[in-house]
Image (tube, rainbow, N blue to C red; front, side):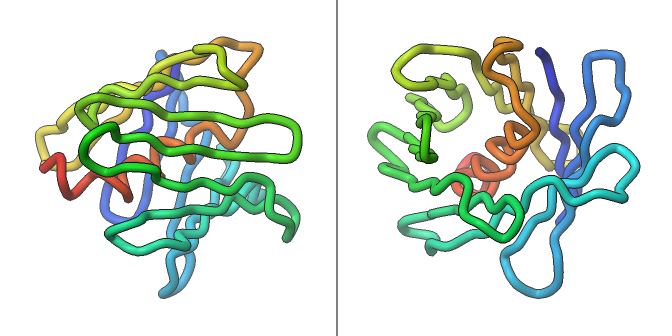
Length: 154
């Protein structure tokens, strides 16, 4: 599965390789909540909540008002890694340069997230992930990377 996640202000759009919009992510209210919506912008699939600060970013992915995944940034500089833990699985988003991330699920590499610079100064994130590891919340990984490392990468 290949996705392109493009940020514009407080909104992100996830498209497939043909340019068809699959998801949108919008900031809700004044807090640090981002709703992952389906292509019609009618149904809220997941919510990403920023729980940490700039020095130790953390995130929670919520499904039906329950914590689905807890994400924690282990390191911002030496070995940039975000660890996401759920009840039945875990993910690691591991990088060396804060731009190219390897997606590791339960200890096995299942894909990559590449950071690309757009003309307008915003970042685009190209996600390549195995079909068996893909789920609707995967575009929120790009949003978490943008919020944790975006300012450093500019």
